[in-house]
Image (cartoon, rainbow, N blue to C red):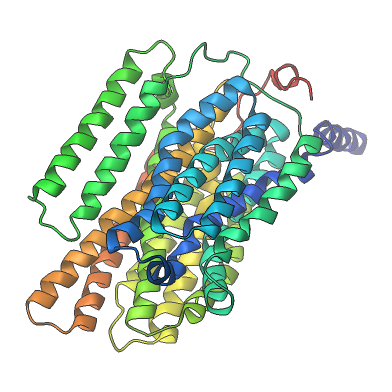
Amino acid sequence: MSESRNHSSTAAAAAADTGDPRRWRALAALALVQFMIVIDNTVVNVALPSIQRDLRLTTTGLAWVVNGYLLTAGGLLLLGGRIADLVGRRKMFLIGTAVFAFASLGAGLAQGGSMLLACRFLQGAGEAMAAPAALSMVPLLFTDGKERAKAFGIWGGLAGLGAMVGVVLSGIIVDLIDWRWIFFINIPLAVLPLLLVPRLTDESRSPNPPRRIDFPGAVLVTAGTTIVVYALLSAAERSWGSSNVVIPLLIGIAALAAFVIVELNTAEPLVPMRFFANRTRVSANACTILMASSMMAMFFLIVQYGQNILHFSPLQSGLAYVPFCVAFAPGLMISMRLVPRLGAGITLAIGFAISAVGMFLLSRITVGGTYVKDLLPAMIVLAVGLGMANPALQQAALHDVSQEDSGLASGVQTTVMQGGSALGLAVFVTLAARRTLAQTGGGTAADVAAAAGYRLAFSICAIVLAIGAIAALVFIQRDREPAQPSLAPVKESVGQR
């Protein structure tokens, strides 16, 4: 009996050892770029007032410093993932990382709003090439299910941690150095993977690549999303019935509808309809939108509350997130233990529910509040919930993905993350701004009106996260074993170095 057990253990160890011996170092190099990209999504928030003063940007122009990046990345990620499947994932990763680094240099050197916005759009294009290629390489590197679960846990954890570190770094850099360095720090973070990834990974392509790329679909989804978000942002300063809101909104919706029609009638669509046959993947991507929209709004509004109501300096605003970063780690560790036992769906539901509680606590902020009483408890609860949700969400989004669609699946997941972030920034910030304007118009003091706007946005975010918890529990497959992408032909399709 003992010999049989020893033999089983030896066989399991041998199976784990059959993976690429470079895989963990490769994961570290790939994750470094993902960490850099996620940092860049939030690092500008604290720096926005300083950027506005130095470059004399309007309020609308300032919003596009954030959303121009998010929308370009989100709109082009599907195209980037599909091209990576065709020309090679490692090649696209390296090109995208180089473009991102070059655009970061330009953003840091920008002498005017136009140059900064152009570089932000270029950064988004760089992410669209690098991010889906990097994520699609992870399941190819880790063929063992338990190792893959751990790798996705690390990946999802770094993604969530990067979002918080970005806010902390921004405050420190803006107060102690200069806002331009929030872009310059990307350069060394990009150079290391550019040097290491060619040595640590092999090239990989889809075994059945598309014969042509669906550029019309890419243009329609990018344009449609951008125009819809523009309309929602316009609603912060104009009535919902204004032509400046209604006309762009209708045009954007029409473009997105045209995208669906094109995908249904194209031989080589950007997003094949068969991709949506997997309920777990589709549900995970829907949950991603709910989480990303709520979290991006939360990051933005907490900074506004801290600086406008509590009168924090940029440094204080950044340091306020340190407990958030610390509390994120326990959530991550809990998630990595729960996913193999309970499955991604239940773990994700627990993470969403905890996050909803944290958001509800934020909805109780007041003008006379303090950091310790009003922000700290809520941020700690949110961090634990996010830490639990992120790895489970990454794994569910790539559930049962084939070698052929590895780049597509990662592109879809990252697209909805970016699109959800932009949507949340537009919708929740617009709701907060409109509530503030209504209160101010009624004679309420500016600080009191602003706090009322923040409370409304946080309350709706809490409801959105609670809906996400229910959706994850009901619709995401309850696998107790880590998701197993269908990667049977890995050895043949990975190809030559």
